[in-house]
Image 1: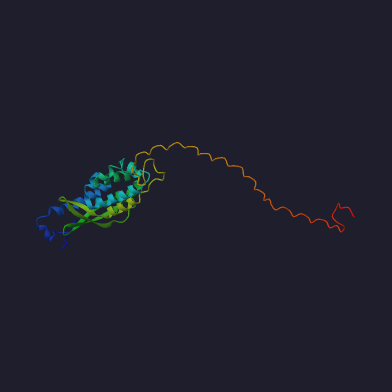
Image 2: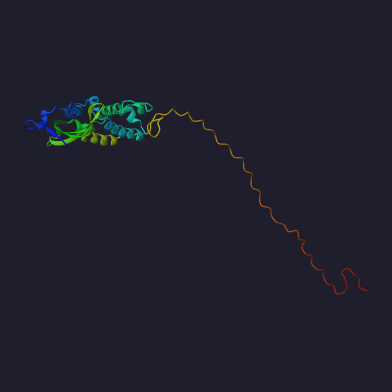
Amino acid sequence: MCLLSLGNSAGPHPAAAQAPDPASALAPEVAADFHGAFASMAWRALVQRIHPDALARLRLATDILVRVDTTGYTLDTLLGGVVSTAYPALPDEEVVRRLMAGIQREVPGLLSSLVSRRAEVVGEVAEGELRHVVYRVVTLATGAEPRVGVMTLARDGGRWRVLAAEDLAVLETAVRGIPIPPGPRRPGRDAGGSRLTPPPPPAPLRSPPRAPPSAEPRPAARWRSRVTPAQPPPAHHPRGTPGSVPA
């Protein structure tokens, strides 16, 4: 059975006479600290209040950004100068902390909707091993009407941490859409932006070998007939052969 306790409820709740559950009492406090860390941009305090499963989702979004970046901007600038060979070994908490600091430094507009507001916890709902904390948030920049939100907390190492929240969903979407400054691929990096050993200098170019001189074409041999032309027949002399003396 779910139990909803509102901070502004009138009169004692029937369950108030029971001994308070320390874990349940801490869940609203963790939620309030989560909102306060966002508002003050205290990123180390923020990541300490995020559940490992939620940190893993943010880490995955960062991994994708590193993999598709061919300029090295994500590792060098956004994450504060992380060497590609050391990046896989960094814990998710450290990656997300560096990511938040980099977003604040490089693309602060992505955080405007998360930091320019005031949140107030108004109650919680218990559901088995989870706690759903209800809060009211007012955006300071636009002066919009207050709205109500819900975040889910789960235990990790005996402490309540934020497992799912609208703020984390917005942040994950923003990370996937962080613009990479245009530019050519940096020398010594592969398609994923990883640093590579500089390639050896290219071998000097050699002149292509000269083709042998072509022989001048000989004129085609003319065909000659070896047939001896026929001799004309001898002339006919009625009175004997030429040169004979008449009798």
